Image 1 (cartoon, one colour):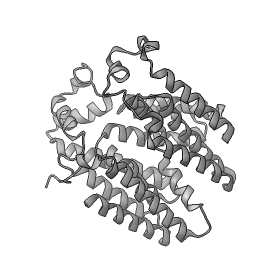
Image 2 (cartoon, helix red, strand yellow):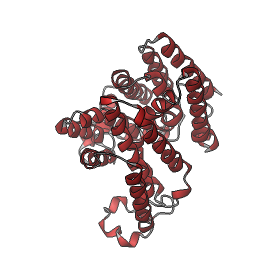
Image 3 (cartoon, one colour):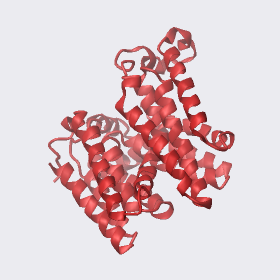
Image 4 (spheres, one colour):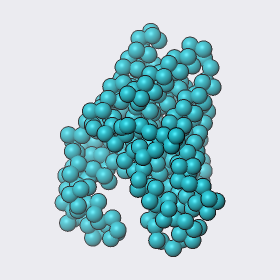
Length: 351
């Protein structure tokens, strides 16, 4: 299968980067991913729906008249390409190049082991986001740039970045809570974390009774809280939830091995990651709502996992084996075992 072959190639490039200590290898990885997503042809479960939106939005006025229920930033790019005479496939290539360039730039500038981060990103998010929910993908990538703004205490820059992300997915505004929470949760501990998880669990029980709050939900969104299509989530039986909780406590344990400013940065990532699990728990059986809120916070997983495994022991070779093994397991869980691959085979390009 081509998807597994790409995973092996990415792992090989990550090894070259690590042993040559040449972080610029990450741009090769990012280019490969962007081309793979950008040249797809009727591949991915949202390909057709976005194609329909592209041909509906054929004039810039569609951004403001409300005829198409999509965010302004995405509509602007879509209608711009349409008015310039480009077809949908050219737009998809551009959008993929934009998304993966921003992600590659972020990990190159801010993250140790940047190619390892993109390898894990491929297994965890790339196939379902960049080759499926493209708006959410770009919004989540833009939000990563808000993390340094939190760390450096630049609230206005933080808000501006969230605004830019919201132009592609309105749910990005939920990330606003991270700035005050990072100040309130000055020191994150196991006791605090367990308490918050229990509290979120009780909230999840109440959410299962929409009569308590449906009056406050805007009319256009009530289906997400009442329709069986959106309210049959696995909740506490969700394997992704438990994976996130185990990774969270693993990262919380290994943070004590970090020193100084690096420890503070990792602790901030852990705080953000905790919110991802709290969101899934508090959403109860509202799988779509919980997933959309959680995913923006869970994006930091792509940074935490390589750090966690590379500090597992003093033996770098063992750490790499464990990391690649875990990454492969995630790929199988997210893409194969879940049945998601059925929407992605065969992989076809526009050529």
